Amino acid sequence: MSAPRPGTQRALLTDLYELTMAAVYLAEGKNDVSTFELFVRELPESRNFLVACGLEPALEYLESLSFSAEDLDYLGSLEIFGDALLEFLADMRFSGDVWAIPEGEVAFAQEPLLRVTAPLIEAQIVETYLLNCIGFSTSIASKAARVTLAAAGRPFVDFGARRAHGGDASLLAARAAVIAGAQGTSNVLAAKTYGLETSGTMAHSFIQAFESEREAFLAFARHFPDRAIFLIDTYDTLEGARIAAEVAGELASGGISVRAVRLDSGDLAELSRATREIFDDAGYSEIQIFASGDLDEYRVAELVAAGAPIDAFGVGTQLTTSADAPFLPIAYKLVEDTSGPKFKLSTGKRSYPWTKQIYRAADYDGYLMDAVVPAGHEGLIDGRALLEQVMVSGKRSVSPPSIKDIRDRFERSLGALPERLSSLEPAEAPYPVELHPDLER
Image (tube, rainbow, N blue to C red):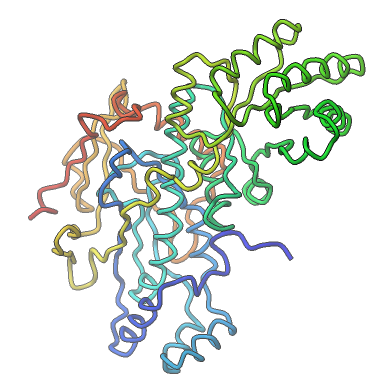
């Protein structure tokens, strides 16, 4: 049996208080159409922008949302809920409308990434999963975008499955990383699930399992002649490079070309220079150098700035955990219902009323500013609307875009950012996001 895609078979992936609230709403006859918005309160200190991500898995969740007999039996066993709620949940399907910023588009704090308009109980129950899926995916895509900027055109691959915070997280992280610039992933299930390019050859244990590095390299190349990439730092990196050069000569006579070697430890800048010299002197300037080993955007940027002859990077733990900013202060708040606008005034956690739209102004040089306005107040700035309707009455209103389409949007959006926001350091002048006066009032 294949594993479910993240977003399916997840009705119980909700906080208990969503269900206790639902029980009261049902008993009190409060299930009118309501609008909730999902947004990030403020950017992490190290982020100049976000990359919207996680929408497609979220829509899969909404389209497939249903409580199975087993789910309802479990809820009944808690002896918390009466029959009325269980009977309601047995028939409940998501029937609402959804608007969202398209995946791959850059976004900023206080901008709704997602808007849900649905009967109150439905809109409430989906809160937990939407926050989890979109918050995590956006966090990882935003981190990957920084690696993309740091790599300055050199490819990188997601290597983070083994240290991601759970299996579903590793799948969503691989997807988000590829959307925001990664060439592929080492995660085979993620590649199968989302149609991503796979990457990977050997670990240090493979080298250790043979009597010598030479035997390990030759054995691998014989069985994978089109994927001859050797890990050369198990014992002595430069000796490993020399052995790889010798093996390249032996393999050439059989029509096999060594594609690359991988460095996974040590001073990557110096070792890559010495390795490059070894291969160039041996007449193998076409053999590329791939680097990994606890890399993040800062180390990648340092290596690029130092002129290290590294052709590609493997980025793992730091990427799939977004280690420097491991969470986003993301929220999902009621903003309007049939009685009018709703808002919070809690200290440090206030929210703005009304169903909203975002308009983005741009010129030939790129993005200029965003304006968050009550829906219907389109006149604040001259720009394009960012929130697009993606679901009507519980069904998708547009065909799911391909990963390539989403990635293309990301590349266009990243390229339109003001140059100051492309720095890894906090921009002195943040991107301007203007709130309509009616929201403050």
